[in-house]
Image 1: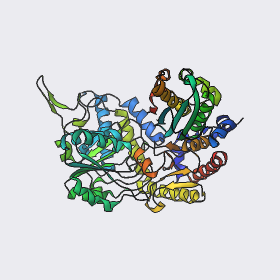
Image 2: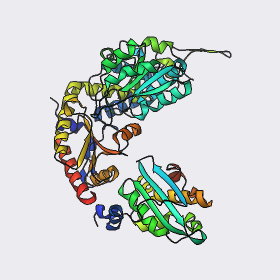
Image 3: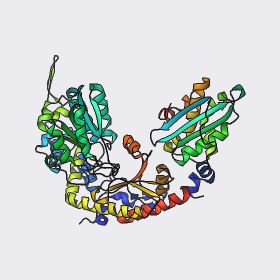
Image 4: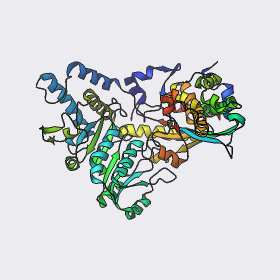
Length: 407
Length: 144
């Protein structure tokens, strides 16, 4: 069992006062806080092992390369990737999805093809596919959600009549609803039709064990900054044979095998997709974040967040003027979106800020989903390994204040 | 004054809970709508002119945070009886003074949404200038 109070000592930010009060940070789904173990690893790397990676013949460059490639190994093991060369460093999850949409989608999609995404997608896994479908003449279709915010799987087979389903793009965990999507089922369904499946794991990788082989997916994207690591580093995992067959995404230094006046050939995986100098120390920090999460235990993290979200749902249910979106606690990851009757989320978030409670208010980069829910925006409280039940209580106290003053 | 009173002082709360000139005019001489894509605030403004391009009647509808809706309500009182040219030239500070509280850059866009929409409506009906001087703040608002 995870001891959140003990883990909080690793995060200096919890000593901060916000508006004179200790911060109750309930916005980890947007970006997590960083433990000193990750910050120390990055500082250590900069002070003792830093140079540009690859090709350097001197000692420091070798150390830097070992740190960078070591991080790739850790990340590959973290998601049970068959091979580390299938892990491509990106800037963030969005860039990983764009890589697939451009380098695979633009080449392989055309009229008569169907691109399938869910109604719950973050813009990062929605806009690239909508754009690529439009560019290639493919049909862009949406897997609907039911009233619980879960995918209507019975609707899947209706898409067969629309054309050849070539790619299914879905999130593993919804950043608004906390829904956990049945990726194994979707992978089988997609593969039965010869389609690929691309998974956005930005909200999943920080919070639960990911096994790309068990999920059966073809691509999976996530980022370091939501999982105790630095911003500026993400990872795209893809099946080697697919990555090998794909065109490059960014072109320039490092991604080449040979360049002449006449033509250029591409380097091997993963370098073909890593043009230019990578976020080197950030990748090392990413690796340190993986170490940190593994030391705490992904299963413990998931269980801890599950208890918190169950408690939050229970407390919010006491408030008849609060609408909660998404599935029940037993099928939900550690976040909850809600609205306070008669009070705009921005006003709710403002009042909570004065109480030292940090939540997110807005459309959460899910405008299509907001429309589906029939709201302009929601409030969202999200939990992580350092979240404690007292913060849920402070949230509920703050909601009473917002309702009293504005509702 | 507590921070709460500072931001949501009585006048704003009053305009938010009892918006003035609420409801769209039909028919109207000028009409436009706008959104703040950042937070989903929406405002539609309609205007009827009297003699000499004077704003005789104005009505609005919208949904969004207390700041965006209260500011638009205040605006409707501020511009009644003024000419389209005068309102087109009205600096945003005149409205912000009326609101009377410090606003962060994020909330500033909520506050000036209604004014931007009104200036667009006047532009469409009377060819008055658009609020270009707002720079990026106005560019980020989606007006139609």
